Length: 303
Image (cartoon, rainbow, N blue to C red; front, top):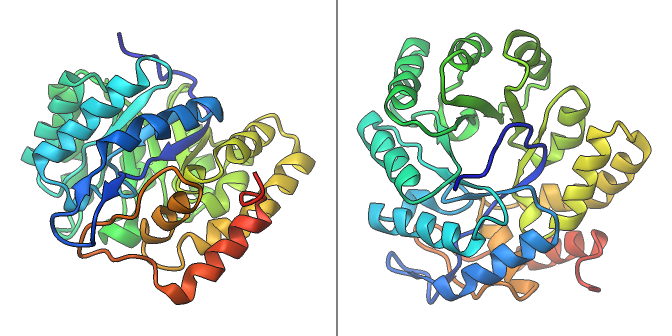
């Protein structure tokens, strides 16, 4: 039975994919670590899990690995927490396939990034998402991250797509906070609006957003959850205090390309083994101290 996404507000983790072995094109997925990660987030009040998104190294997984990760996370979640599967591609055919597989494997929703590299027009974006929404009866969250895709889904396109059945929300990572108000005022009342950037999540929520799909939540899930809840409740003092404690972490987890720093950080707290797949490499030793300092400031190394 699928969990209901309507009204899903707060901190959603963009989950790392645990791996085990030397950095190579063939670094193996460490399925044995998945249960511990899921348990960690359930216990820490994370509101949902995004599996095989950008942070989950979807770009370097085979289609079989991608789909098997969805199955494994759904099984370990066991109805305790919603599972949102990353199913985007720069091929509409591939995105359709992955979204159908996500539904078949029990995901509660799909997160679908704008097509990258081939830079479609706004009409192309609309048609891409429209056909997936029409063909797959599964809640779908649009994902706009122009810094990675070289493709910016404009507010007007989000508004048009929000009128389609099955499109229930957007992860907005353009960095333009003024888009929150524009989307909120023009979309249906229950349309979900999530930040895709930890560093602006507090302000994003205070301006009407519903939460954040978070990298930081991989290592600080309880504090991210509390910060989001405080912002939702308009407790500015508490939200600011918690966000200030997390801000250096928000910044230093992007000191190298995501998910390089966050995988190193999650390894430091004992939840995963060392392992990342080429062309990504392990965190440079010169940046270890920077990430450690950020973790210490967030009180993660004394627990």
